[in-house]
Image 1: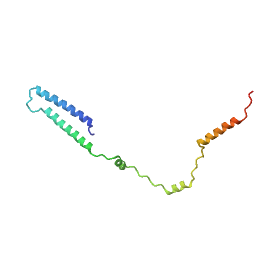
Image 2: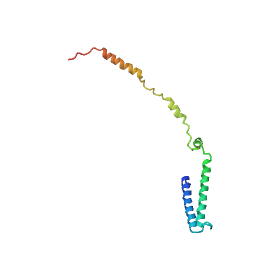
Image 3: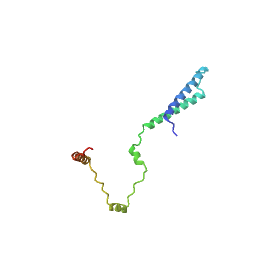
Image 4: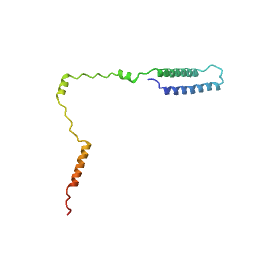
Length: 128
């Protein structure tokens, strides 16, 4: 599994801190002019490798990626099968049902107005 870029940055930072501590401990011991210790050499090598890995990551990120169209073309979806002729003929023989005629809004409004008008014109019943 590849190392995440964020973890590379953290590892480089932690390595730098450990390297600094190792250098300071060597300086405090009084061997400032001598060659770096084994621990320092290992930390320096690890830091170099981490930085190389980070550089490779950056180079890889700059490479062109496949477009969405390329990915779509490369998918392995099965092709649609042709329908048998018998099905088409049988399906074509049936008549499609026509939808019921529905009244439009204007027709509904006209009916409602006619009903109100008829109610208004009808003789009123006497109150008892």
